[in-house]
Length: 118
Image 1: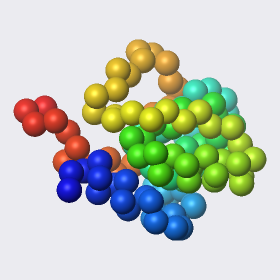
Image 2 (image 1 turned 90 degrees about the vertical axis):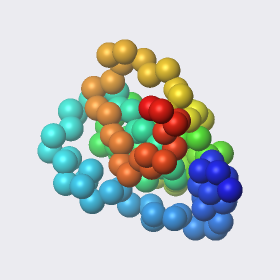
Image 3 (image 1 turned 135 degrees about the horizontal axis):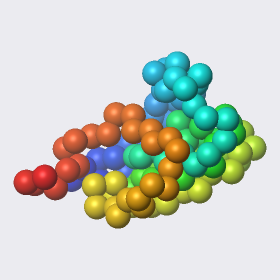
Image 4 (image 1 turned 135 degrees about the vertical axis):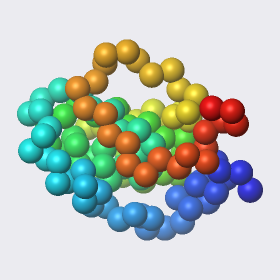
């Protein structure tokens, strides 16, 4: 089973693998966030961090490669009444925009997804 299949299987089950609340470290950084601006949530999985950033007033783009995770993330955003743009992509292969974000958040990105030789 490759990494994509492993994560897709993990997120395809009922419930949220990491819960619905943001990562504690991210939450502790709240005072460092701008009041407005664009945020990128890298490998955001089921959306707990991206949704929380949107709740703080940021315009969020959440990127993840798991369709199952993004379905849950969309449901969480709807539940919390926030708008988040979700984009399905492998974050190791995605062509990141230059100077497009005020905040970039990456929590627990699995380095095993990195292409060999990178």
